[in-house]
Amino acid sequence: QVQLVESGGGLVQPGGSLRLSCAASGGDVSSDPMAWFRRSSGPEREFVGAINRNGRSSHYGTSVRGRFTISRDNAKNTMYLQMNSLEPEDSGIYYCAVRVNYYIAAENEGAYDYWGQGTQVTVSS
Image (cartoon, rainbow, N blue to C red; front, side, top):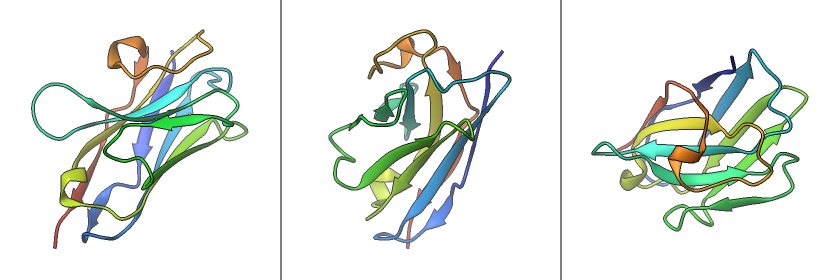
């Protein structure tokens, strides 16, 4: 059973930066695409971005494109989310997820098999 743990959230001023980490244990996720989602309000999670299994390709949701960057270190079984130029609208709980036994990442949360508990990001002055 794969377990994912996010870290790195916190309070940051508008225009600031944060780096989130997602550490996997209980299984090797180096062959699986991974993604970040966030929940700001309501029950649904918004797609933030995803990265393919070798880390060479990533894509992002419209609201974060150009400001956020996803990377991964398969030797450490860890994925990262570098968030720059943060805005109050970026506040929310950020979740990482892994899609097992697939080659391609997806933008819908239902495609992912394992999820972390989330880490809170608050952008406020």
